[in-house]
Length: 102
Image (tube, rainbow, N blue to C red; front, side, top):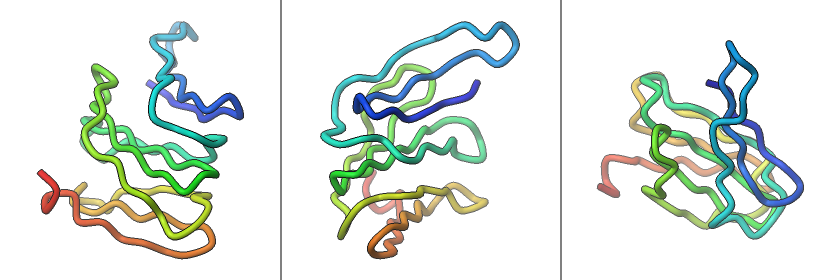
């Protein structure tokens, strides 16, 4: 799978092998989605937008798991190698311990 963010505030998930769009995630973002990342185990999909939001979703279903407000525009999101932390960068840098929010 591959994911992409869009100016229309959506995240699109596509199958790499077939090129087929699997799902479009429309809810949650209030600004242009600038960055997306899968967790190392492929279980989670994080996205950050221009309106200061970070949303973590179940990669298989698209269901929202966590939502966080960032201190500014979110230009990039990345998971730590063990998948426990989410880093977001933009006007500020933030690290969120995901296990603490379960």
